[in-house]
Image (cartoon, rainbow over all chains, first blue to last red):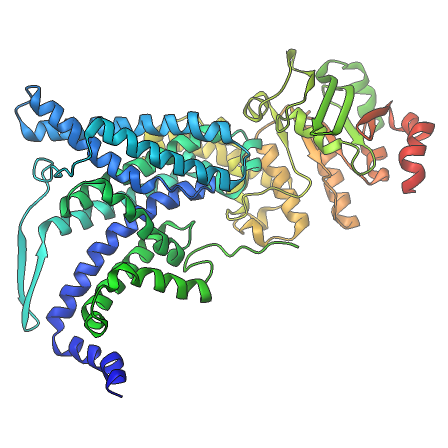
Length: 327
Length: 266
């Protein structure tokens, strides 16, 4: 009885009793969820266009962040004195590196494996992951780095609101992250719905052979989606790196994207965003209100259990395409 | 029908020819040393029993399959294999046996996709939908609307094609191929699974496309009545080999064809 009360009544009583804490928890959940959503977005872009689950998306985040910091250090140690100019230049060069990476992946990994089963391509992304880990460590070293947040002009500090009978504090950085992420998602949405390339991408996602028959180049589309997901990885790397160090340990966040994708559906951009936010908020609420009951540590498994429940009832995800196959 | 055959009998320019093409999948020979040509402006039928290699032949022509040996000459250019992109750019459009449409898109968007190769304006202009890109878009839309009118599918242009009945899906697929303004149109069983009325409609469209736009057509079809009615020349495949080639009347009387195909099927 006591357990039932602690599980089903007490947490909600706490939520109502201290709305300021609830709002604070929700906000932190949304911020964390947004980062999950960004990672999932990178997966969705590639999965839509080529049906490949890109295991390397996580390491691409790390690699992008490390490249940005590495180039920045190179620039400042070679006489670029204005830190902002150096940071912006480093950002531009990193975007260039992500483009070269997309070209290389298409030419060296995807093209030789064209028409192979999906599982082969999936394994190839494992190979890509370990290549990027090795290559990244070789070039940038294995020690954790600090993201050049201020140099990039991202705001610092806290905004406090005296409201709801308590104090709610919002990190300025989180607000900036939310704004940038929204802009990027909106930009991608416009790009993929309004341009010829967007139409071609949707065409490739629907049917490879039909797309080929109207003269759409698969190679070109693949380069574009890998570049787009490289850009998403860069933004994710900056945002995540600003909250903690940039190190290869970040690579495991790729695994956090899996439950997000199961929730949202593997092929849906809105699904990735909504799924990410649900996981982020759910995780924080579970940790704060139910965590103490079982001694904490819920954030390491909560997302996966939620995903499991979804798999049982909505196997296609909230926004995924229902696949009906003719037998 | 007869007037057209006479007119085109004069025009004997070869648009596409395949020579000694052999295609193998592992130990199975799908196409064995087959040669034939398609003349500009004609309707060419490829027939044969199931498994004769008809669809494989189309796949070789538009570059989906790479033959082990042989040559393909299209518009005077000879190569050992086509690539899908080259084929599309060179003016070869096709439809598929089991309809390959972009199921999530509307009929209109599907047909617009056929214009992909013809869109030339830069990304920037497309994004802001202004200036040259807008003018270009309007032009493409006009062309697509013409095709929609021609195929009598104006009422379904905003419908997601996955929800359309099969007969209409086939028509949208034809529309997408026509939007490419092809020189050579490959139709893989355009009337499969259709009722009599739909077949008659489709036959009419095929003849109209051939006559009004002057498009050369190569088609695979099982309905012998349709084949004999529509086509100027027929090539017959059986177990990957060519067993007959000529006008429908001659092919119909060919003993090898009767043995392999007509004798069994009818």
